[in-house]
Length: 162
Length: 152
Image (cartoon, rainbow over all chains, first blue to last red; front, side, top):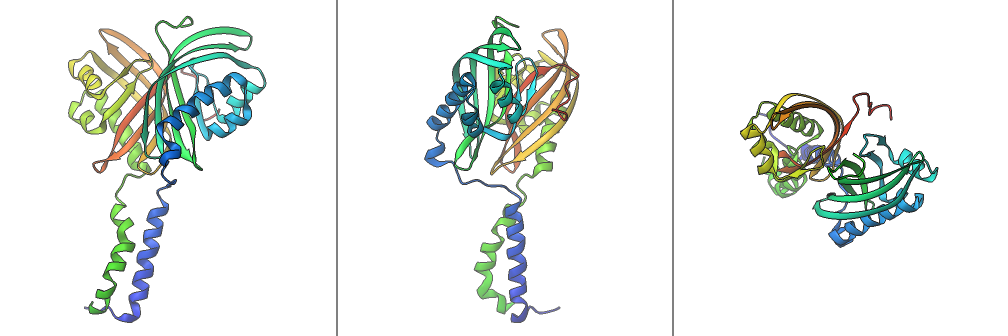
C-alpha cells in the first residue's frame, strides 16, 4: 500500500479545500437577514410595495421587486418585474387603491412568505374593477433588504368581479 | 498516515462543507415537487406526509388556505380526488435552506363530487428539513390554457 508522505500533504489539503469551496459555491447564500430583515421590516416592505403600486412609483418598485419576479395577476396575466413596472408607469394599469390585510408572515432564513387578502380597485385598460383577492407572495433577502420574487392571487368568492 | 495526523483538525474543518453536501440541490427540489404531485394523484397519504412540511400553508386557486392535516385529510377521505395532474417545473431557485419552485400544472380533480379541470401557475417554497425537501408553501392562480410562461 502506498504511504502518505509529507510531500503530498499539501496536495491533499489543497484538493480538500478546493472541493469544499466548490461545494460552498453551489449553495448561494446571502448573509442572514438579522434584525434588518425581521418580521416588522418585512411587513413594512409589503405595505410600502402596495403603496408604490398605487403611486406607480417605479423607483420604489425597482428596489422592492426581485429581478426574477414572476407576478401572476388574479386574471392569470403574467408579468415580469420590467413589464409590471411598465404597466403602471405607462398608465395601462392603474391601482386606484389597495387595502391589504396581512394574515401571516413566515421567515424561512433568507426566504419569506406573506399571505393575506386585499381589496383592490384597479383600472385596467380603461375598465375599473373592484376585486377582493387572497394572495401569497414570496420574498427573498438580497443585498440587505427584502425583495418580492413571486406573487400569486385568487379572486375570493365574495369578490365584486369574479 | 502519521504525517497527516497533526493536520487532521484542519482537514476536518476544510471538509465540513463536504459533509453538508448531501443537502438538497436543484434536481432534488424539482423531484420533490414532482413526487408531491404523484403522491396527490395516487392519494398516497404516507408520501404526502413525508413531502409536506408540518407548517405547510396550502392555498388553492380559489384563494382558500389549508394546513397540512386539512389538505391530507381531504385527500385521505376522498373529498378531494385527483383524476389527472400534468405538471411542468419552469424554474427552481436555491437559497440557503430553502428553494422556490415556479411552474405550471393542468389538473382535473373531483371535489365534493364536482369534477373540474383547471390550468394553474403555481409557486412552491421548499424547506430543507430532516435531510429532505419539504413543501412549506403552495399557492396558485388559475389561468387560461393558452398561457405560455416561457414567452412572457
